[in-house]
Length: 133
Image (cartoon, helix red, strand yellow):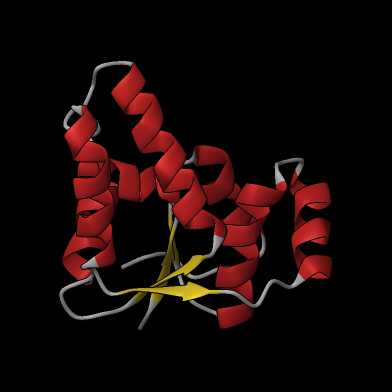
């Protein structure tokens, strides 16, 4: 079953000091499943990597290398934004439209959401999104 992956999980795949079990589980699932990401995922990942570069967590050359590594994974970008659902979820759970986009994609596709964000995990449980295996 496909699943939605957010930037917090993908960042842990790429950054040397970001280690978490949720990310490891999601990465192992990619061996047999595709992951879905909203189009904003790529903007978030570029921003995360540039911040890591500025903080000297990664070298300048690693920014593009990390993005190329992400592009090599079975990540399917969803460009069909459901504005009403994103706005409703952001209002209901008091978080950004960015986080709501991941939640909306998982809800609409009826697939699990892989996230390291505790607030987003609670919101996923509240709207009965299945847990990632």
